[in-house]
Length: 249
Ligand SMILES: NC(=O)c1ccc[n+]([C@@H]2O[C@H](COP(=O)([O-])OP(=O)(O)OC[C@H]3O[C@@H](n4cnc5c(N)ncnc54)[C@H](O)[C@@H]3O)[C@@H](O)[C@H]2O)c1
Image (cartoon, rainbow, N blue to C red):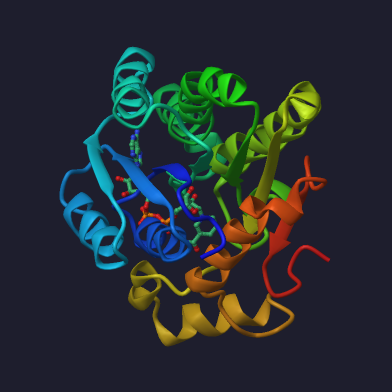
């Protein structure tokens, strides 16, 4: 167990990848607090963490709401005395031609994918500063690096995830002397349940764009998250790591 005794906070914990990330962190010895706006996936998240013999805290929270996020993160910090690891995983896209996107839809993309990262990170950083360090891993997207090449008509999502990339680099510099590393993974298309809805034609068109001709595995992303949290990764900060079968090349 390479992260024994660490306290981690994971957003989007009830989602397809969140549960896999939680499982990997718990398997390395972390207690994991999961935040999600949807209650239904949080039970499975908690079970995954407990199955690894670690403690889980499940908090139904809308992380686009600053005050609610402060309350939820405050509860975790009060329960555990602090946090060592933050994985900003919650997010989600929307497919809409740019000229058809409404003002509300634009703001929603920014709130869900970028403002949420601000809200949670702002609530966690003071605890990491008090502890003398921490690890923040942000889940961006290939969309941030390659625009809409993989998923067309996702301009709001691409712009918000590019904001996550910028924030990652800025925070890496700002907290470099405080022992806090801030890195991001930019995943390409993953083998998640949502992909099972692809028609054979859609799947073929998607794979044709990816040099390896394969989808990514959330279990492999989870290993990368763990890697960024290891003591040996202390000198890695501000890295934006595409994990995408070569798509960003
Ligand atoms: N699946 C992919 O192929 C892929 C590729 C690149 C990047 N990503 C990114 O990876 C992350 C996880 O994706 P996923 O495939 O597991 O998606 P998912 O939809 O299964 O999970 C996302 C989770 O975030 C939660 N969430 C959304 N808005 C929230 C809010 N306001 N407050 C709290 N929780 C909220 C959802 O309820 C959901 O449980 C996302 O940031 C996504 O953009 C996914």
